[in-house]
Amino acid sequence: MRRMAAKKKKNKTFYGAKPTLPNQKVYLVYKLIEAEKNLIADGPFEKLDDANQAMEGYLAKGLCSWIVTYNE
Image (cartoon, rainbow, N blue to C red):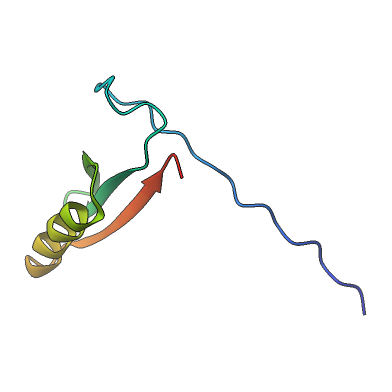
């Protein structure tokens, strides 16, 4: 049996409009509006708690949403 090589995690870099966040970990909250077939990003958030609060608000409205971390 052959072992598969461990995959390296792909690092993603977020280039936002705020120049105060260079190479700082940021969080984007994505929400999917299926009826309109739209994928919308909210943020960037500097704190995970703020991103969680936004995501929970969308989930409470019945929208599929998730958090993506950039500049990790």
